[in-house]
Each structure stands twice: as structure tokens, then as C-alpha cells.
View 1 (cartoon, one colour):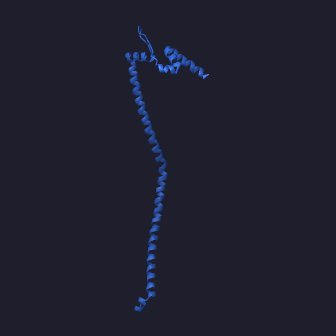
View 2 (cartoon, helix red, strand yellow):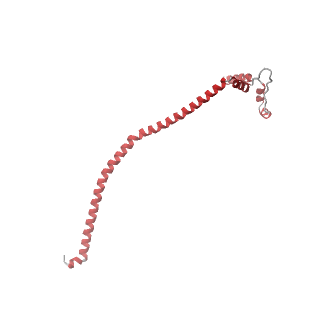
View 3 (cartoon, helix red, strand yellow):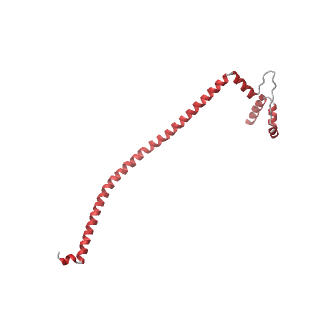
Length: 156
């Protein structure tokens, strides 16, 4: 190359174009090499991850649901144990004659010989329903029997 060729515009443009083309070609080949290398590895990795997810999804779902069921059963067990404890305490209380006597008097309106039994009726409530007033004046066993008769009649 002579000085004149060296500085001519056409020569400069041609050299610039060749250099640019060489850079583009090099970068494309690097990118393609990287892309092809990563694509195969990425596809394999994605395949392995998807396989693991599919293989473990159902067992994990079962595991989680079983753990929730176990927790619910443990809670039921605790509640049942608490209920058993309460019932044992109640049974022990009923073994005491004084408690049994108190409950019988309270619930069944029993009176001891020589005592006078009475039932206090709220006048406001008695106005609302004559049945309540009539039921309050009768002995408890009559009310129970009337309830049995009414439920028997409603079944027919």
C-alpha cells in the first residue's frame, strides 16, 4: 500500500468494513458457541428439574395432607383426654353423697320431710306464655310425661 492508497477514502472505508465484518463474525461465533453450549445444558437441567418436580409433587402433597390430618387427630385426642378428665371429676363428685343430694334437690326440686317446696315464677314470663305458668305449678314428673306424650303424638 502506498501513502496515497493508505489515505484514500475508498481504502479507509474498505478497511473499516473488513474490520467491522471481522468483529461481527467473531462476536457471532462466540455468541453461537455460548448459546449452543448453554442451550444443551439448560435443556438438560430444565428436564431434570421438571422430572424432579413431577416425581416429588404427589408425594409432597400426600405428606403435607397427612401431616395436617395427624395434627387434627392429635387435637382431637387432646380434647378427648380433657373430656375424660372432666367426666372423671364429675363422676368423683357424684360419689359424694352431699353433692348428689344437692344436685337432686336443685334439679328435681326434691324437698326433705318437713320442708315446704315452692317454685318462683317470673310474672313477666308468665304473661308471655300460660303454658310456662301451668308447667311451673305441676310436679316435674308430670311435665316429663307430658313431653313424652307430645313427642309420641308428633311422630304419628
